[in-house]
Length: 341
Image (cartoon, rainbow, N blue to C red):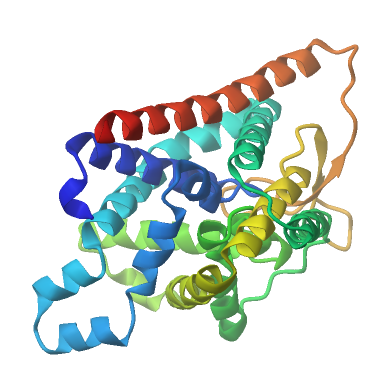
């Protein structure tokens, strides 16, 4: 498989990893959608399935080259490289754009999901009423999740482990956003803001040869939380991929129909026109995270005001989002056609 992957393909795979990393960062958007629409979802799940007992045996027996080949390491490493690049670059830009031009960012992602649904509905071959049923059920499930009320923060390590397990669904199940699920579980700020900032601070201090953080109980607690969350994420990534691989092998059409439903239902999360509802204490005061940003509890959605120019600008960005997806799909298909011509 890797022998036929050209240099251009490898660059594109890194770019797709960047896109997955960026979309995973946005609550309501699933990185798995990128894999699904871009046509490497099955290879992604297949590669994750290779992290199993056979892989462990190869490591313990010192057969590292065989281990790397077995887990399809070139594919995985290129994707991970893209995600790492995204985390330290594109996701930071995205944070800035959300802060300054939030409605237009949501509009662009809304359009990208619409474009994905349009492409998938054309590409997907409906064969039975069961597929239609599962598309509807997936849509209802996605919409239901998007309107749930978030829980309160919980730093119990067993619950943090569960959060890690659940959060990776955004990578493996297109249409389900791991970031949004963390918001619903009440731990988005704790796990993706506070604990990550604690890691950054710790690394910075170690570089300066400052180890005073070992006496900081709060810092150690946050680092422990991040470690447990990471362990849960790895466990979830491997186990969910095995379940999906099993299901896709036996019920591929129904599985894909459900995924299309999930993606459609996610439109409720990324709906462009909404007002923030902030988390407040018992005195009605807005709560802030460690970066002094107000904590968003949920959103109040409303219909667009067509007397406002911002509405038409947002619609323009929706069309841009649709166009981006359709162009990427066209470009990918053209490359494949020219490669095998």
